[in-house]
Image 1 (cartoon, each protein chain N blue to C red):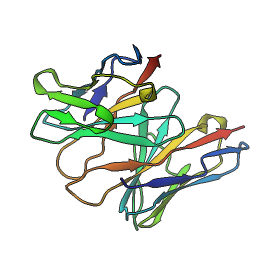
Image 2: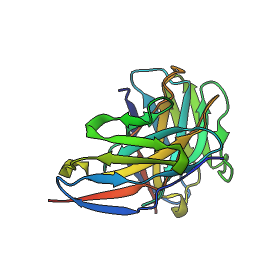
Image 3: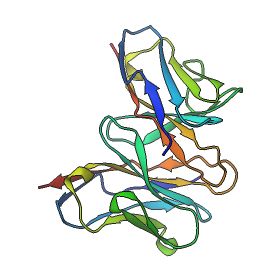
Image 4: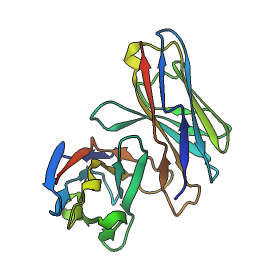
Length: 117
Length: 114
């Protein structure tokens, strides 16, 4: 199947700093990518839908000024956590949708563990 | 809006035993249904999916799931569990038509005893 990578796999940052997480589709072009947040032993919560060349669509309750999403190309989407605080510590997962309309399948990255100290 | 319930937080089975993970969904029409597996350090991997047609769906790694409309369920089964199946399993439901976005259940952690 298709491969989605994330970088970094884990990151520790100090409170108040910003962190950028990259999501790449390695062997297909993804017009749509998704960003999820996963708390320990809980479900994946959709944060936003990222469409190439346009603004991301954020889910209710997600601060768009805090979680900046950029989808500059068909293979790369980035999530920047601005002015990070300890409560932003979490596991962030991206996924990319196969563009074939009959597939309706998402491919997930391995996730990025963010720890804010 | 659609929703998914996975009533079991943890399931413990012995290696070689059969397995059934429960999933109930809420959606006004026939949904798209998925089962994913998440192993530590790895991304979610699709085990199987149901869009239409035969209600018994075969997936990878020997898994199968059955869509039961009357019970709003999509339970995952495997006849004989291997130690490598220990992982977190997520059921997801997606709205049909247009650009769906799946909603995930909270997950079931599978523990396999030797």
